[in-house]
Length: 271
Image 1 (cartoon, rainbow, N blue to C red):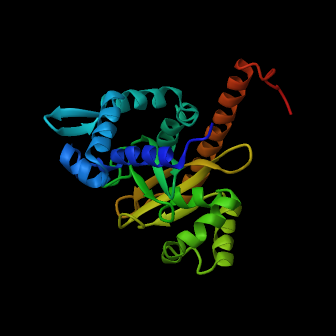
Image 2 (image 1 turned 180 degrees about the vertical axis):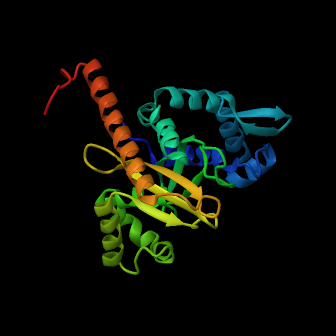
């Protein structure tokens, strides 16, 4: 049976409580949460109790809440079971050892990109993008290469909603120009950017692809061009593309083995 609109709206409003918590404001009072919800006190208290009982928020003192222990437990589960992270094990480390620059693993999250994995090199750039941080979908190499490989229907829906940001990012002043820019990224199979978030920081990224050649995520490296003037960008591009290809293959292999374990049939040894 389908949920009623009121039920779905109530669930959405309750889950929005989790979005209140941030590094800038990690603790919220009951009164502040109720004010944000703009609903009846009884309903607000019920939402808070439900999230608290689930461990998604936790009381730290009378009437004050932070994010809860269940989130830590879920983070561990993601680290140990997510195919994208499992497939990246050893690959990011080898990438850093090979070229000496910090490596990032990212995935799309709404109209943004989330860093889900990282391996740091010595002297990595200050204010670095790190696990758990989000960035816009239109800035930086790790974001732009994901954007280029999003399904057509997602791009078609995204463009009118984010037209201004797309133009400001230099990705095109029309739908046709936007598609042409992304087409060039796809033809190259990588993106290089300089200084789009931190002055002097160069980023190189390549896509982690599904079997349908859409973006599951991206692999990127970054370095400060003022401190590392000896970097061979072509070598960095080749290394990043190889790492992304290995992770793509690793994810596909994990999925094939999972399908076989679920009784979906034998894992093919050749195509």
